[in-house]
Structure formats: C-alpha cells, structure tokens
Length: 561
Picture (cartoon, one colour):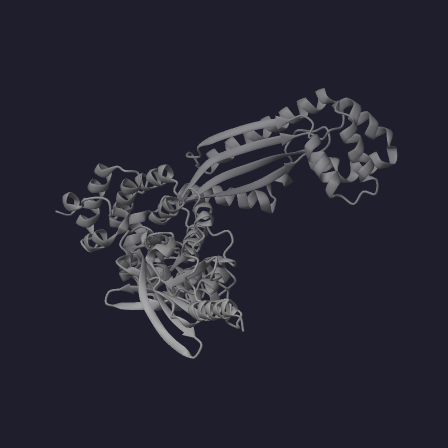
C-alpha cells in the first residue's frame, strides 16, 4: 500500500477515535444563561428557562448527556425535570449536538416554591453515557436566588362572602281604598264608605296613630274622571271629587282623633287616559287592539274620544266594563314601621336572643368589629334559625377569619346543603384555595356569580396560578394588598402605589409592598420608611427582607436598625 495513503488512513482513524473515544470535557458556566435571572416565583411555582450554547469541537459524537437543574437552599436541594441531548453517533430520540458546529439547547426549569428558596443557587448536574461508560461531570452554578414577591399573595386576607341580613329599621307600608263615583257625579255615596277596604284603611291609620313604633307619614288623595264626556266636564268632575274626598278624610281624621299624620296631599286628573289604556290592555274585549291603536294614533284627547265613540259597538263595551272603573278617588295612607334601635337589639341579644327575628340577629352581628363576638352571635343564630343558610355561612366567615379553616369548611358545607345559594359556593372555593386545590376552587367560583366579593377571590386565584394580568382585571378597583401585588407583578407601579395608599387599615404587608415599590422605582427613602414600619408591625419581616432580592442593591441597615 502506498506509504502516504497509509498515513492518511491512520490520521483519519486517529481523529475519529479522538472525537468519539475521549471523555467529554467539563461544562463551563459561560455556556449557560438563565431567564429570568434571578429566578422568580410565579403563582406557586419557580419556572425558568436555561439556554445552553455548546461550542464547536466540544460535544463528542458518542456522548449522551442528561442535565438536571437543581436548586440548592437551606442545606438541601430539589431537582427539576431532567433534560437529555446527544452526539451525532448516538442512536436515540434526544436533540443532537453537532461536534463541528456545536448547538444551542433550551432546558426548561420548574420547582414548587418554598419560602427558603429566596436564598439559593441554581446548579446544573451532568450525567454522561458514552458507550458502555457512565460518569458524572462537575456541577455548574448558573443563577443565584429567587425573587419571592409573588408569594405574598395571601388567601387569609380575602373576605369570604357575607350572606347579608335584610334588616330595615324603617319599613314603609302603604294602605289604600277607593271611593267609586257614578257617571257625571261627584257626591260620595254612603255605601262607598262602608267597604272592607275603607274599614281596613281606617283601622290601620287609627292603630298607627296609637302605636309608638308606627308613624302615619302621609295621606294622599288622587281623584279621577273617565275620559268621556269632554275635557271641561271631566276636569270639573275630577276637581269636585277631590274636594269632596279631601273634606271627608279631614273630618274622619278629626273624628278618629288622628292629629299626627305628616302631610295631607291631594290632586286630580281630568281624563285618565293612562288608566284607560291599562284597563283595556288587561281586558277581554275582542277589539281591544283596535282601541289601543286609536290611542297611539291620536294624541288629542277630544279626537281620541270621538274616534272611540264612532265605534259604537266597542264603545258600549267600554261604557259597561272599563269607564266606570275610572271614576274614583283613591285614598292612600303611607305608614312607616319603626324597627328596634341598635341598642335595643343588642340589649335583647344579651338578655333573650330568642326575641330577635332572623333579620335582627344577623344584623346584630354587624354591630361589632370583634370577630370572636360575631362568631358567638352567629353560633346563637344557627341554634335559633338552623334552616336559614345565612346563619351557617356567616358563622363560617368568622371561623375563616380566625384561621379555623376546618370549622369554616364544615359551616360553609352546611350552608350549601340548605339551598342553591352563591355565597357558600364562593366560600368553599376559598377553602380549596387554602389547600392549593385551584381546580376545585375555580369550580366553586363558577357557581358564585353575582357575589360582590367574588372579584377579590378570583383575583387571588389568578395570582396563585400565575396569570397576573387576569388577576389585575379580576380585582378591578379593589383596594387590597393582593390587588396591589398583582399591579406590582405587572409593573404598573403608579397604580400599585395608589392602591396601597387607599387601603383603609394598612398592615405590615401593606408597608412591605410599599417598600418593594420603593426598591423597584429607585426611591430609597420610600423603601426605608415603609420597611421600617412593616418590621415594626411584624418583626418576622426583618429576616425576610435580609434575604429578599428585591432589596439586593440597597443597604437595609437604616430600615432594620
């Protein structure tokens, strides 16, 4: 064989052995970039993407590498899903890295969030399979720490849905009676003053005059004439009917010794076309559609009457069945029923709660801001009115606020069993949120349409699943820590600042979020002032702040001293 040819073949074999037979070299941290860096909590996960740029002449052709992202923190570590890629001569289905050209690979990363991850290192471990050989390469650190701001979303601060009482201190009741008149007459017939309606009206006014908790607020008289006979005649008739009725009422009030009745008002309507149209529409008159058509076609009262009179057969039915009902005076008494005062309700609850009706005892619970006292009142309500879902729902609300989620769940479930009501459905969704079962929570929220508190619950739900934009939309104009957090995470810092400043009862988290805003907007004074107040209200936040990457570029000694 030609000596030169042998040399070439030997050199080729040597090169082949070099690219396939040697061990893979160590990976360098320069090969990797992480997005985001540092890592960041999204919902309750820590997701990221590692981009690996493998240089040419590095990845041997018969090597298969399994990369495992590992987060090291607090003396322990957790691993993300492993990712494998292979050389050109490996038989497999993994992405191939060219020996000559290198390659860019993307490695997905995802961890379940834990608070201690704030101070951590993201490492990549490498296991190599090369032919029959297996070996491990040194780990490479690619990122430091986790921004944990999203983890401040707190289900405990969401207000469960209240099933409200229907208590009204003043309830207005109206009682009415009609005095009917004959055609073209305004005198009051004796029989019209002896009807059952007139007797009931008189009785109610007399009782209201005597009772301490009832006030005769107003008496009104409205008198009418039917729309036949011409406007001038009807105007005089209606006016006389009003005058005679008012005179009767005035005399009867004196006779019954009713002196406190607010105001006596009276008015008359010459031609009651509106009442006429309503009665015709409700009637069984065969040609009523024709009559209604005439009413809509002509606006002039005189023209209307002429056109209807021209329909002689129809007018006869109107004269017999409709028009007599429009010749009357209606007397209406407006009576206010005054309920128990706040002090009376509280006193009765203390002495004998069974004397309170369901609305009063539910209202009683709203008269205190003491959650323990409210829980006691609702417990009493469940005993007195066990079949009203509101007692159980609102008891669960107080248990939820006290952190007794097991007790709250039992109460909400009992409320849900007493009917298809939306409030307990929403509240059961909050219970599932405390268990991080967001699918169940969302199902419950879907059955709670119309509940005022639902927007806040949905806002938190979206925060927890990492959809920050949807959270902002769900919160709307809510002024809460969770709403401000959603705005911070979507980088709407101006709106977040306004939201936090509008919270009625700011707590430690409110001030901590304001400090985060200070850090993100390079306002060191704002950071220090608010972080100092946050730590004053909750000393545990000092340790969090020290490890919080939001403040990594600032000296916290002034705020934490």
